[in-house]
Amino acid sequence: MNKLRVVCAISGGIDSAVSALLLKAKGYNVTGLFMVNWDHTEEGESNCPRTKDYADAQRICRYLDIDLHVVNFVKEYWNEVFIPFIENYKQGRAVVPDVGCNSVIKFGSFYRYAFEKLDAEAVATGHYARNSFGDFLESKSENSAQLLRAKDPLKDQTYFLANIPESSLRNTMFPVGSLFKSEVQKIAKSEGLGFLLEKKESMGICFVGKRKNFSDFLSEYVEPVPGPIILMNTGRQIGIHNGVHNYTLGKRVAVPVENYQSADGLFVSKLDFKNQIVFVCEGSYHPSLFAKSFEVGQINWITQPTKTKLNFALQRNQPLLEARLEDNIVIPSRPIRCAAPGQMCVFYRNDTCLGGAEIQSIKCTL
Image 1 (cartoon, rainbow, N blue to C red):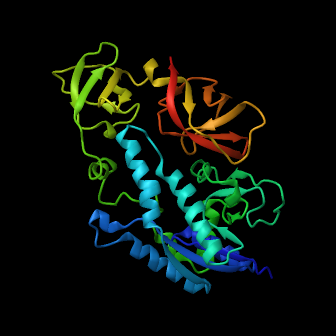
Image 2 (image 1 turned 90 degrees about the vertical axis):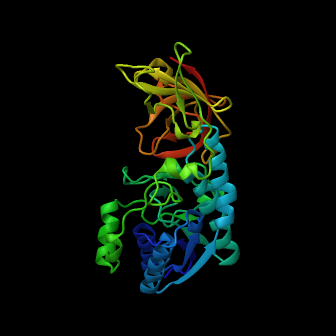
Image 3 (image 1 turned 90 degrees about the horizontal axis):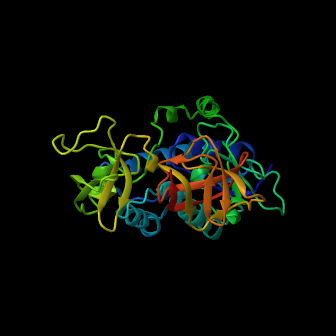
């Protein structure tokens, strides 16, 4: 039996539970770790969702007969994920907080805590991704680890893992990475964890409460600054907005009919956060919405590319697109609709997630 000490992140959900179950079945010395990343009293919620998740995590670990530790990363999450997220949104940058949560918390704070406080020899998570060293590090070597797309293309989470360091990846197991979601559910049901099938899958941004929509949530942290809505082609003001942060590139915009009428509809074509201006164009396929090239920031390379021609994605589960990378300028093989500053550009070579970076600016449109 393999007695390698593995600390497994336990969220109270089905994927992390089955991950721990599979580790235990393989004979690893498994310890569960429940992370508290968000203080729901911030939202004025007395019925905290975390309480239910923690209760489920306890139930899972009792059933599997493994220890469960709880660690509070609220301060780290607030300072290193949430505040940067808010500051970016103030500037009209469409950042993805899940990327920061993975790189800063799960593969940063959690990883260090597991090794420094719990004497881990490896960590495991319920992410749908694969490690070139194997789902259980059975093929670990002195070579660099590679992040591979999950077997289940609909659940693949490598897009959100593109900013993690290779140094953490090389000691990380993804027990469900080679399984389809339906297989994970079947295992849970057959192995006594069927109660987890009744839980709704965690979707969206973790700190947005169930009672709010995204704009309402942001309004609690970002002071609305009204400004003009300007028709890009003419420079004419046709309306007033209630804050640039409420808009994203390509979003449909409504203005009073007495101000302007468009048969093709109005869509956000540019956000000027400095002057609090929302520029709009007519039609969802207006040339200004299509980027011919864009600049990305510092790229986190998990695996260094050997060629300048790469595949990339700007959204999770988006079909991979071809591009040429010149320094930090991405030149797609065809114009890309609604590429936006702050958006994560993730690079791939076949099934290997090479790394990624945030879009800094759009260099050229149609």
